[in-house]
Image 1: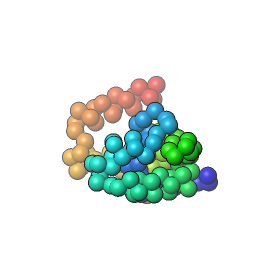
Image 2: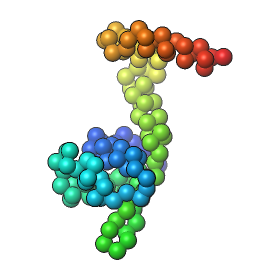
Image 3: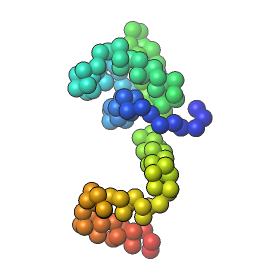
Length: 125
């Protein structure tokens, strides 16, 4: 597949449904869990699934008239990639910068900061 690339939001929404379900997944399952909420037509979902196949995130098999889809990229691997990319682009790989931004913007409560300190001490041992 080559280097992993960031997914557009629409394709990431499809992948969240793929990861949340036991493979294989069908277009109708995605339509049921996401299409109605997003008001997407079946053809939109099919197009997004084909893009994900082309990007190497899922593979497809045809069984009669129905296509089934299987994840190739694990959710954990993609989240690790996205988080690393975010940290590099916005915080120069500085965890301190990230925490300071969250704390200063009041998106991180003191209790969460205490929990983080406890976690860091456990990991440091």
